Image 1 (spheres, helix red, strand yellow):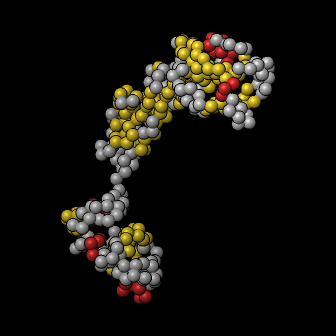
Image 2 (cartoon, one colour):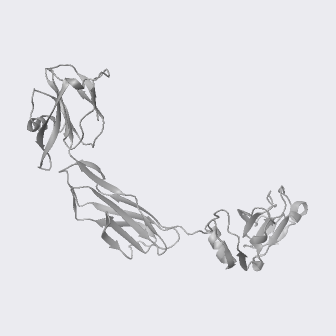
Image 3 (cartoon, rainbow, N blue to C red):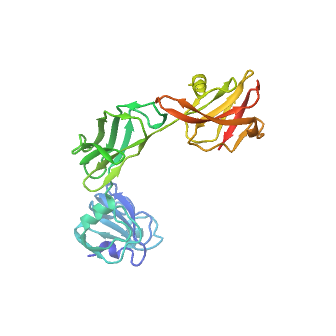
Length: 329
């Protein structure tokens, strides 16, 4: 018989969970279409209620039924023994997702044990999280990162994990098939490799049904910004010697505010020539002082040993005014 199909007449069919009947509970309050599965055998409807076994289904047939005993509300409920549950057929697509039964599903002679398994124990893909012994992030060119240890922590959901793989970009760098921990655990890959340019790392976990991709760990590099105060006309080499590391900023293009404390000196703000010119420079009071700076270029040899062309903004006037300056692109 098509039990679930006929639940609640033409109303909504709403699974409400399970009922432990070992203590002979009363019927719960319900509406037509509400149904429960018996988790532990006993009686439903109180001590004088109806005996039920684990797996039996209890279905409400009347809207607005209050909680009560067999004598009070039992006529509003239908009990379907487990032995009557055989196959289910329904060509009407389901309207919503319930457990592992997705919206739009139809059924043709599906065994009820399959229905219950899909409903109550939906398939879940494995989970995986990737960490590295070397934190990702932005660094200066020349600040190479050597031999990261990658750890992929997997969590089994439905099926045992059959494979864990590590990737640099789209390149497979380690294949653990089968993995050391098929029921979940930490797969460790000590990677002999030097990271000196932009790279990304991911890991995947497969359970034979689906593949899950981890979070991404990214390493990026840039040529730094420099700022500070000094004598008139500093060269690129002098700027590097004077402002590294205290006046070095590891960042990509971004509006920047910094504190300057000159003593009869000049303000300087410098960054790679590949970036566009500044649109405005503000003093601590918000006044536009762009015209008080002169822009020129020079080369700076940084941590990676290469000579890079830099834009150098130098203040035109000798000053001892300590203040915050804002440089906007």
